[in-house]
Image (cartoon, rainbow, N blue to C red; front, side, top):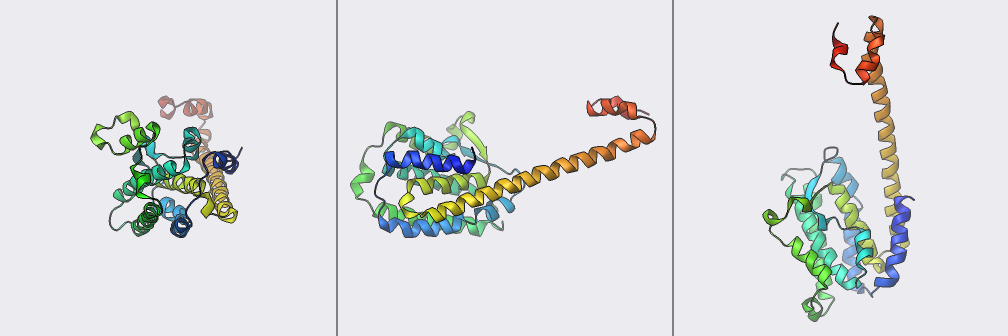
Length: 243
């Protein structure tokens, strides 16, 4: 099953259980935030080294699967979503020097996120935020606010900035689904399909490169009568280089 199918299936399962009425005032800042997120591939992947990762708490790797396992009220999960991604954005910005080409983008994304959070708070009575959180959410909240030097090493994860924003975007579509049309979700799925195609092309090119590099290394052995040492070279034996 493709990633897109998994996302769609998760949304179908989650929404009937957790659906609450999202205040209409939330939709404008969230759609503005979504515009910024649509450029995440350019700024969070192309402007970073290949396989670049940052260290985040395991609870900050917040995916659709986390939401489905919790099975809690949507409003509570929305509060958690803001708490988690607030820390994610801070960590992404922290690793970028002032002159990094993606820093203005990340700063603008954080500003739009704070705007959406402000509207979220204003859209609900103050009593909502004074209510005691479910134990599951409170435990996550405590983990996220713990001093970094007190966090066990086993609780840290290395994740690419792009993957963190992918999670950010997908969970936003789920928890605030009433603000997003099927066309917008389809655009996000098409984007992921394009990424998968590019990944396949990259792996194919890598295989071709490996094949021709190996062929280039083996040709001198054959020319000098050392073709019998090919198996030794492939097995990593150092003595095959001895003339």
